[in-house]
Image 1 (cartoon, rainbow, N blue to C red):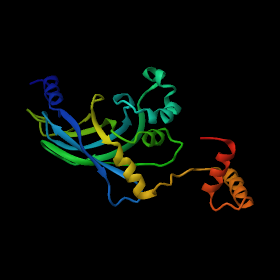
Image 2 (image 1 turned 90 degrees about the horizontal axis):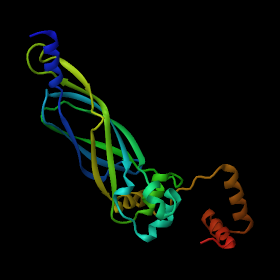
Image 3 (image 1 turned 90 degrees about the vertical axis):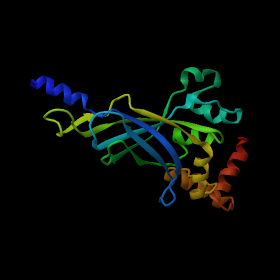
Image 4 (image 1 turned 180 degrees about the vertical axis):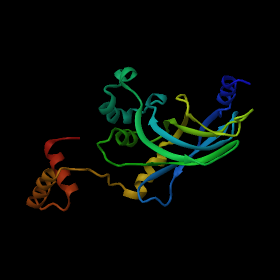
Length: 229
């Protein structure tokens, strides 16, 4: 067998992998609100996998569900008026995480952890706060490097590398209530609002001058005074 023929055999020995997200649940002992997704990787051909450095991009595929009228106001801030959504709606990137997948022959499962930020100015947070029922459609896009054992004639058995195909992806539906329950467990019904120090000082001065009990009372008084909804 010539060297070119041997290379062809080794190339065909690259593992053919499929990815699936099989579960989503709250991580019980995290310091911050965190979701744990179970990623299953299955080898359907090629040499045994000796490890993977896998990077996962998690995004919300917002066009894969319908929305109730009570969510329209919040979504309008992100995507414009409902009649424009067919051209303005697009995926929202949520997280990017890297995991080391251990060696396996046929299949394996690894956890993917996604922290749930509560900054109210983030597009993802605005979206998740608006969607209170049903399911959140999530797409998982993968890239990285596969380390595998080449099979076939010599140099079979050598450790080879190959990139994770750009077409590798998975999909799952996250119950919207799971995100809301997780946030409420850590923060109750008090979302975080970040303010520049100067604005906070002015707000606190207003609160003290009008003998109001809290910053929330001061904001409520200002909203009532302005006639805002």
